[in-house]
Length: 68
Image (cartoon, rainbow, N blue to C red):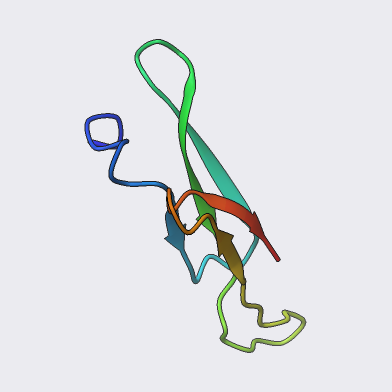
């Protein structure tokens, strides 16, 4: 589904993972076509710091350019 709608879905953003991760999706041609950003949660637990992400996207293409 990610490959089929790659021209529409420019990136995937998920949260509440208790860690910082990303998944790189490859198409049937084995080339990178999409990325999923998985961020920590805002929940405070003992010894874990809550976090958030700020994303910068290109205004014309809506492709993520950077995240902080």
